[in-house]
Structures are given as structure tokens and as C-alpha cells.
Length: 118
Length: 289
Image 1: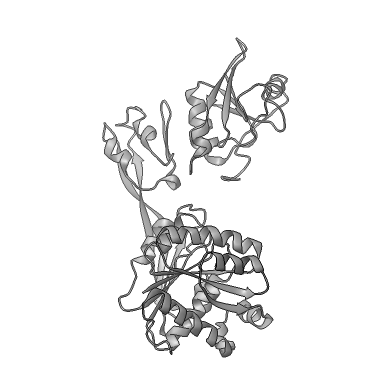
Image 2: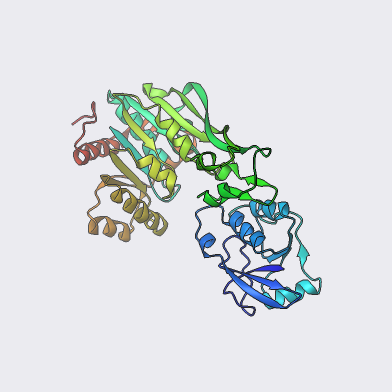
């Protein structure tokens, strides 16, 4: 399962480059090519810890891979502790991001690429 | 009598006005305590030059998990309102800097696997500054996100019978609300710019919501009609102005008390004292009539 942060919850809509404050999360199954949407609205308006809880949502959804724009230190540590791989993408739709990932074109994050509250 | 100096926008001259006001009323015979609640960047000490500071750590309580007792049921993380705990299938991740020390996780853990431990987030310093001003400030450690507990620790030093001049943090969030919460009057220091006015409006609306009497000081005064219109339309009293002067800026940049270098501005601060007395109905003893 691959989780992609999304602006509007559609495959052709933009990937949300903000991780914790993403409105929706698309969970895509490469085996069946099915996708479903997780609402992340609660975290979008959380006063704090949005990245941490978004990471938890993704873990609970069973994803093993995350594609987003930028991941802060707390979210990174949670995802890493759960053994989830993180990839960064910019200025593309969710569908394009999934394609770029399958083509091996996305960069694997080995650490948080932004500070908290960037 | 507690007078908070706030602003909304940063850099308007909150501290400048607060330290000079403290100095002015201290020299009029009043016992004054200066309380710096701008714990992320306390600057009042640069001007008031307190000595023999007595330093004390500020600690908060945070949870620690005993993994031998934990069954990874996930209740602590599910119930934490501050997103400070994440439960994984074989881990409990605690983000201490997110914790608000409510201890809910300790109370609800069915296995008794959570206990509280102390964590230092900053310190307070107390001493005596120029003109006999009693001085206290809080300092939040760098990278710590929560100013609230340090502000509350600073307020424990309130002295009976002293006029308390409280320097608030900039902005309009929790630390500002905490700082203003027990004040008898809030002085908003602003500048005649669109930015100053924008943030002033938000900050004033918070103080009015809290039922505080308020007034405004315009620092670096100059022609900016929207600010005067805002004050008129909303019936917000203008307490004092300080002109835009190179000599004031130079004196400030040397860490001087303006009134020390340029006593002619004492009139402005005398007006501020009189206006606060009139509007709060409280006496600032020693202020000349």
C-alpha cells in the first residue's frame, strides 16, 4: 500500500506537498490498482502535532510507503519507527506521483527534509 | 495594580515603553516591579540592568512509559488531546515537547505503565534593577515550544504593594492571553503602519473579549490616518504618543533608558500614567497630578 498526501482526494488532483496539514490521504494498492481516500481534516486544523497524527493515520491504514512533499522531524521519526519508507515529490498530481514512484524517479527521504512548522 | 504592555505586532516598542514607564513611576516614588513575560526573547533587562539575579529552573511534568508493563493497548495515544503520544504495535513514542502535563495518560493507563517525570524547559531570574525597580524575567529554553509554564512561574514572584509592569510577548496566541489574564489594564503599543494596525486590531479584540480595560500608545508617531480612525470608531483611548526621533532610536540602540538621556519625554510618560489612572480607576501612587 502506498499513501500519497492529496489536496482533494482524487488521483488527478494535486499531491499536497504539506504532510501533516494535508486535507486528504490517498491509499493506493499497486496489486489491485484500487485506491481509497482517508480524510485528514482533523489534523489539518490540529493546534499541534498534525504531522505526528497524520503519520499515525498512515500507519493505521496499513501503508508501507509514503509519498509527500516535505516531512518534518516528528512525522519522520514516527514513520521510520513503523518501518515506512518516505519519498518526496513536487508539483504533480497523485497519479503522476505514483507513476514517478513506480518508475523509480522519486527521491527516498533518509531524514526529515524540513524543520517542524516549515 | 497590574499593567500589561502588549502589541500584537512585534517590534513596535512594547519593551521601550514598558521600561521607560517603569523607570518614570519608580522615580516618582512608586514601588515598581517589572515582570518580563516575553519569555522567548526577554529584553527588558538590557535597559533596566538588574543585578544579583537569582536563577531558578522551570520544570514541567511529562509521562514516561514502563515497557515491561505496557500491553500496547493504544489508549494513551488515542486519548491524548495534544498529539503527544503515538502507539505503534511494539512501541510507545512520547513527544515530550508536545505534552501539556495534564497527566491523563497516567490516570487512564489500565496497566499503570505510565508515570510522571520532570523536564526542565526554562528558568526564572529575579533581582533588583535601576531606580530600585524589583525585576523578574522568565527565559524559555531555545527550541521549546511552550511558553505558558514559564510565564506562570514568573507570575509567582508578584510582590504585594508594588505596581506591576508586565511586558507581554508579541503575537495574539496563548502566551499573550496568559500574560494578560490577571492584568487590571492592558496598554497596547503600536506603530503607525498597516502591519501595526492589522495586528493591533486582533490583539485589542482579545483583550476586550477578556473584559480588560485597554488603551493605545503610538510609538514612532507619524501621519497614518487609518490608525486614528480605528481608535476613534471603536472608542479606544489614545494614552500617549512618542515621536519618531533619531535621538530616541540611538538612545534605545545603546540600551539606554530614554528618559535618562532625554528627560523632556517625561511629560509623555506622565500623561500615560494619568490616563491609566483615569481609565482603570486605580491609583499609581507618586504620579504627579
